Image 1 (tube, rainbow, N blue to C red):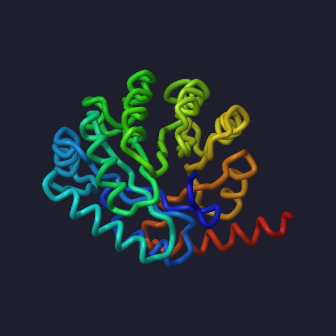
Image 2: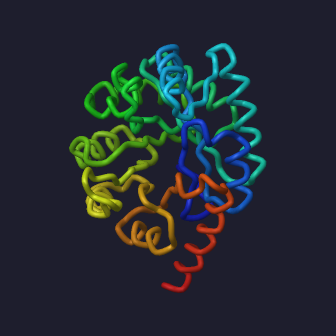
Amino acid sequence: MIKIRNHVILAAMAGICDGRFCFEAAKAGAGMVILGGISFDAETVEAGLKIKARGKTEFHVELGNLEDFVYREVATAKKGGAPVAVNVRVATLEGLLRAGEIVQNSGADALELNAHCRQLEITELGGGQALLFDFKKLEEWINDLREILRIPVMIKWRANMVDDLALAKALESIEVDAFHIDAMKPGYPEADLEIISRVSNESKTFLIGNNSINSTSRAIEMLKAGAQAVSVARYTLTDPKLVGKLALEVENAIQKMK
């Protein structure tokens, strides 16, 4: 079962959400913080270097240093008092199993599989968003991960790339603990609340909604659409404490609606 302490969490941002950033967000009141994304196999580590070379933010950690890095960053984040998940980016089953072992042993509260990244350097390897286009492989990988993992498994994906309901049902059948859906709709300027509502109505899996959450009203709209929690990312870039401020405002608004 996913642990969160309120309805607003910090989403992973490549090269941004390290232990210190997550600590600040957690201390300010985030319901959960998600470290990463972090690459866990040689393929995605190399891809990350290519992404960084063209000016994107990235965490670059050599495979031999991954264990120490994750342990240190998780320990720093957990000092903020909120549950901590680690967003895992892989292109191979070997990398996913390595991630499972390291993340679990780090003391993190959950592992989040990244099926969201759309950077070409990652997707052309079969990682990130490309995982959505092979339900069978995704199911097999998560089943293999389950054999070594005791902590919850979350999966983050971008909406409207595949049949979201079919994906949700496939993942629910193998008991993924939480869906983290970036409710993006090509050509649409705001979050696609309809897809959040449809997945929520068809699934009992814990659902985190993401996209364009930068105010109390937008967070409440997402929750009313059926999400059990919302996540914020770019809204916090200037100050990780903003997630705590938003969390307090959202909780107050929920209390007033009761």
